[in-house]
Figure 1 (cartoon, helix red, strand yellow):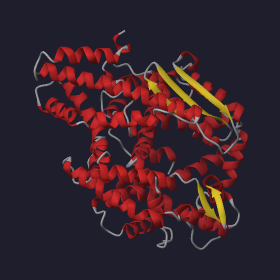
Figure 2 (cartoon, one colour):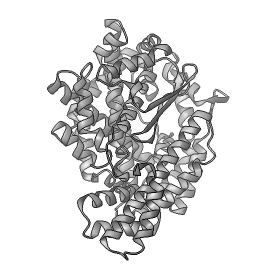
Figure 3 (spheres, helix red, strand yellow):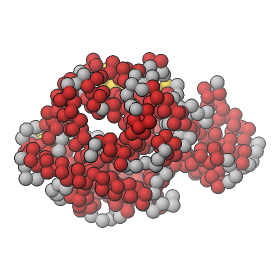
Figure 4 (spheres, helix red, strand yellow):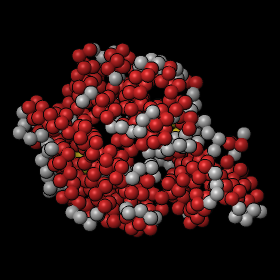
Length: 524
């Protein structure tokens, strides 16, 4: 019952704590009050985001976003966290303080007024959905479709250039944002902003560099061979960025055509039922809309774990939407199985681990057995898709290396020529021609609103593949196996935020995070 009334509990704690001065007991009570407050604001934020997704607008989202940022960046609260961590508090209280402190650091930096104003202006610049293409305005989705599928290589190049043209104008403010974030990160005791972001997920820059170097080493030979194959297949002297997706257009279109909109939810139900999860019996609620291929996709909102998880999306066919439905349902399943009493632990672990819990179920849609037995794809189509998917993930891994090394180096020295840096990394890791007249890095919205999110996706992929490998070795299979559900709940889900992702990965698989499991899963 007490979990239903976090604000009342917080008020009672504050009133009673006023009698205690600054004792350790009082600090613990204040920390619990803060956690309850943050949980209530998180609940309202998710409700407002859900409302915007369903209706297209939200009157209060900006208010609650500001309230959340203000709460986490308040100086008295940060003082409380520091006292708790440096005092005689127990392990649980220290964990609570560490979680809240890590949540707060990015808000302290990005809430710093010069940076906050610049972020707002960049987000507004990125909100433009129309691009100049072939003498007139065109929707981004239409330009992307041309780059991915048009038979004319010249048109694909024009589409690519149209998509990154804004980089010329955005490069200077993006560089300035890197510098401003660094200034505030140093006030927080970090060498730069990227170090601060990594610390939030219990990693150091050197450790992360080592992991990236391992991925590079494990994938370079397979990727170099792939580039040679693409040159031959496309009959071109040098592969260009606008050729990479185009090479796989036919098999992807074939698979998309075989997964129509009416089959997606039944396939999801069957997939989860086979591992012992009955979706209708869980507090996971779907709000689906009629639409056409090419529109929005599925998104999970963990409104109040474990009591209220919601998923919205447009009913449309295609493998990408099938995979996203499985991923977002997997994320909702995570929220529905958290079993923690403390408010600060009651939400999923953010960053790489949330990505991993979603990606794990996305892997179902990439599994040969699932494609043939569940989706009913012919054997040859399944084989062709698995081969294409392997190549595309390999390309994405190499692109992630470029993006992550760029982000690390840009924050290490934002005064350097960032365009020169980008194309040097592109040439070294993608093995493709440079185009120094373009500034694609400055058109990456993630660098503005979700810094280091490529890291989260990359680590999430590794954790998902490592977990899959463990389950196959010890349980025989992942699909059609109730032990899959039991493992996820007992080793991952139930802990919420109580432990960090390195601890959970070690607990679940018996090993620290290892990129070789991802390479093994892809079959390099």
